[in-house]
Amino acid sequence: MKNTKLYWRNFRQTVVSPRFHWFFIKSRLQANWVDAPLYRRLMSLVFTLFAITIVTLTNSWATFLVAWVFPLIILYHISALCQICSEHLWGATGSIQSKSHGRFGGETPPLKGTFKDWFGWTLRMVFYHLPVRIFVLCDPEICAHDHHHHYPKDDKNWANAIYNRQQQVDTGAEYQEYWGLHNAMEAVFQNLSEQPALSDAEIKRLINNK
Image 1: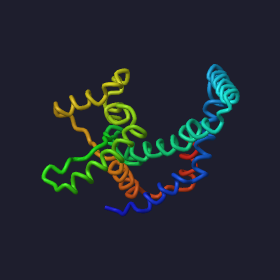
Image 2 (image 1 turned 45 degrees about the vertical axis):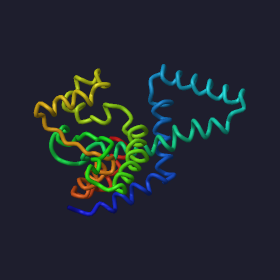
Image 3 (image 1 turned 180 degrees about the horizontal axis):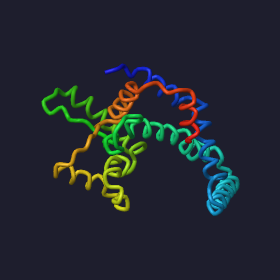
Image 4 (image 1 turned 30 degrees about the vertical axis):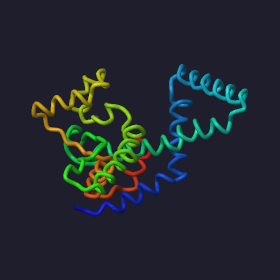
């Protein structure tokens, strides 16, 4: 197994990188204001004007920036980055099903552990796994994303994806899963470390989504 420290360092640097956040917000603006159909661009315009009007009339710009803009830009970008960096074994060979896995919050409790063990487990469950479940893996289909690739026709029943996936596991279906977002990310980074280096042209193509 290769060392993944470089990937973790790049991930941490990306989280606080102004370039990353600018690239992300620029892509979102283009998707809603330039590339979108006319009706969506009109909806974006109406929503933006409505929000600006309400905030101006109520003189609540400070609250708006802290409670709305910051979470929906900076925190959302970080959440999306965590989600993407744990979603698939990017670059691996094989089918999309073989490169997909489930991602779940939580870890095995220390049933025979000491008070210190239980205390540490409780802290991790409350202050790590729970926030990740709420802010990153925030819907059933994202947690059971591999089920989506095994049974794409079941997408309309996305709210029950976790239960449907578990039923298939119980009947012998083969699924890969990771408990703890960091474990899923470590698996993705490990897989990336084993892939051949990309050329500058390939990197540019991926960045431009072509």
